[in-house]
Length: 219
Image 1 (cartoon, rainbow, N blue to C red):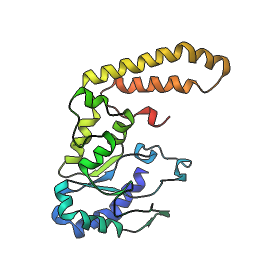
Image 2 (tube, rainbow, N blue to C red):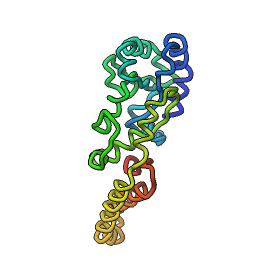
Image 3 (cartoon, one colour):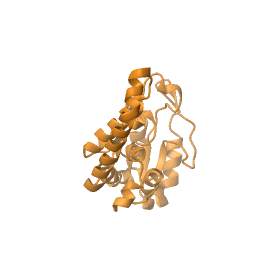
């Protein structure tokens, strides 16, 4: 997961940047963030049956992409495809993979539906909890200019009015579920308790300031 990708970045990503893109090194953010159990640090033997591979993402601004995007993609594609006995996933020049070169606003828009940071309460409510999780999980290995991390930091903390309304909604769901699901759980020893547990975990997340870790992404 994260450790494998970090070691791959240190072994191949750092030299790639130092040797070929030293003039824009301060414009490149690199790491592993987004969808997948490896971004949550939850990889185990079972979850490695698919989408388990070393790699990293290079996030750049739209201006940097116009001048260096294609060169960066070519350089990334030339990196070794086997690392520590693990074969890398198939990659595309078009970037339709988890790793590679991505434009910062486009990356966040693919998760939140917005190519800018959310501002109004309506915009915050329109972003699913799992998307906030995917936008703030994982690890950023390097981000000299701080642009990518600024987005993450903004999405990491819900506005207070949004947090309280989400908390109230999840608690209401817990109360409703508990009234009929919990007695049935006791009577049948079934797994419907996971439904109640999910609501409780969501409430726990909203009880704090940060939207991560989003428990439902793991359940």
